[in-house]
Image (cartoon, one colour):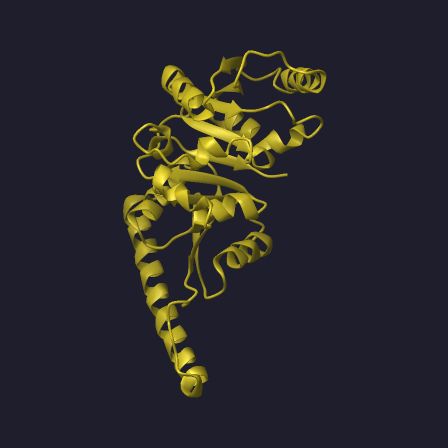
Length: 279
């Protein structure tokens, strides 16, 4: 049974992510954990009345969150009637990332599914948006669902890589499960800023990856472009890619893919889900 964490702030984006998750795992037996975190860091309380007032504010906010979570459960029940899915609600007033880490550990979470506002939602990477923080600071497979992403049959998964995996191919297990469950194809993508050959280590990693993917539909693609994000955009459009999978340790190399700020130029930010894998 899969354990899926669904952080929610009750926005349209978080509901879109929930919808995507319920469709994506439609045929899987799952425990879904709906989590709302409210740090109350915008509440200013006089020191003298701090303890009593804080308790009242926290109680009121928790009760409101519980009511909203109950309403969310009812909305799910109304729109999705899946006997394979169980739902549990969680509220917390801890720091967001600490709360996510705690739930991942306690509930043995397999995947976190989060919504985002596409490219504009990732601009907070420098300052620390919730989604940007989760995929870089929480060691758990995370499925990022942009604002315009709607679930459709997963047929083509893009996997941008610089072939630095070496013997850590077990990281790719979540991708393998998707290929098996969705009968999808994996498109391994390597992008260079100038025409160059793979070095010895990269070639070795490519050969290991070829062996690892032997029983699955896959292909290798090599693009040259000074702008990584433009190369990905071209590839996503030409292949009609349904999902982009990446390894977290390569996020620095591919941060242009995730955190590009020119919204008008990059449409996959708002349309294509990202699966971020951790060791």
